[in-house]
Amino acid sequence: MDNLSLKRIELLHPDVVEKAKRVLELMTIALTGRAIVRFTYTLRTFKEQQNLYNLGRTVVNPVGKSKSKPMGNIVTNAKAGQSIHNYGLAFDIALVIDGKEASWDTVKDWDADGIADWMECVKIAKANGWEWGGDWKTFQDEPHFQYDFGYSWQQLQAKWNAGDVTNGYVNLKRIAPPTKNTFRLTTSVNFRRQAAIGNNVIMVVIKGEYVNEVERTGTWSLVEYNGKRGYVSNKYLIR
Image 1 (cartoon, rainbow, N blue to C red):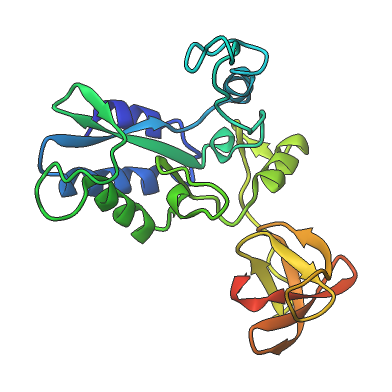
Image 2 (image 1 turned 180 degrees about the vertical axis):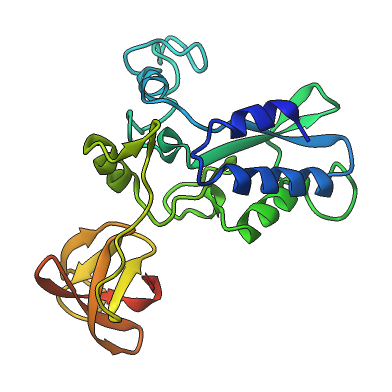
C-alpha cells in the first residue's frame, strides 16, 4: 500500500482509522495497472481550513489569478470548523500514474479491466460505508469521501465548542434514543406543515438530529422535534 497514504490515515479520527486502512487496502488490490490510489487529504486542522478559505478572498491564490480576477480562484466555501475534514472523518484521493503524475480523471481505465479506476475506488469506499462527494445533489466533490456517523458539521462543531473532545478528537458516542418511535435523520430535511411539497416549510432540521414519529402515511411521517410537529419524508428516517 502507498506509505504516504498510510501516514495520512493515522491522522484521522481514531474511530475511522481502521476503516480507512481497509478501504486503502482494497483499492490497492483492485488497481492492477499503472495507477495507484493516494490519500491526498485526511485531517485538516481548523487553521489549515481557514487558510484555505482565505485563498482567493483575503490571500492571493496564484491559481486563476488574472487582471479580471486579481485574487485568483476561491478554493472552498467552508470556514474553519465547517468541514468534515476538520474532525478527521474524511479523506480525499487522487490517482498516481507511473509513480509520478497525479490524476483526478474519473473515466480512465488504467488497468484495462473494463471499469474506470476511479469508479473502482468509489465502489469500494461506498461498499464499506463511506459517503462519496460525487453523489451530492447541490455540488459534486468527486475526490471526497466521509464517514460522519450521521453528524453534520454543525453538530460536530457544537461538540468541539462544548469541549466534548478527547485527545483532540470529538467524541462520537450518541445518547440512546428514548423510544421505539425515535428516528435519526440521514440528511437535512424540510420540516413541513403539510404532507406535501410546497411553500409550507416551517424550518430545516439538520442531518443527524433525532425526531419522534407520531404517525406514518405512505412516504410522509408526522414527527415531533423540539416541541414542534411537522411532516418529513420518511425515506430519510433511520433507527
